[in-house]
Image (tube, helix red, strand yellow):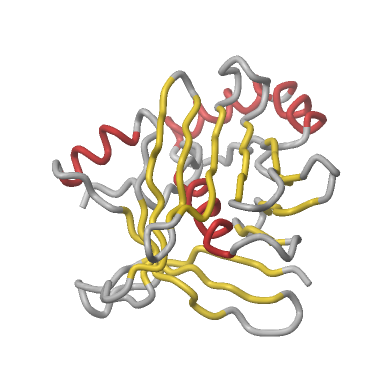
Length: 223
């Protein structure tokens, strides 16, 4: 049985509450319910330091059990980030390593598409690529038209530019699908029973933090 994870933002009734929620639902059996409250974890330099480090691929998130930060469920920290390759560790409530997520940026030397690797402790490694090759070819063929629309949008204040392909399917060496990012709904679907939901939630948060300029990254606000 698969499950779905989605990042949701709620208006704050209390300024001290965590704004972002991770909602979980087992496909076809239950309504989505909040399993964690997501928040970026700021370094000593505060928001300016976080945004500066963010440009280099550095991320730091916390998954809280409640909106008032009374119990930490998981933490996402950057292990390394350089030359278009960033590795993140997902730590459990006691600081144990749940797994590692690696992002290799497109054209960074390892392929034409952005590559994500999910390595969960004690489980098979799964690899996914951003977008299908066919749709990337189509998108690049239409790029001159998209560029013209983008320029027109700047001057006219209207117009829609098509985003690049964003769907990702993570497969193990046996080609079994473990995870899937559905770009239409900005959600992660868990297909394999062995996948820890905290790792899947961390992957969702990371993908949504690397949204293109046409999207809306959840962790880039200046306040």
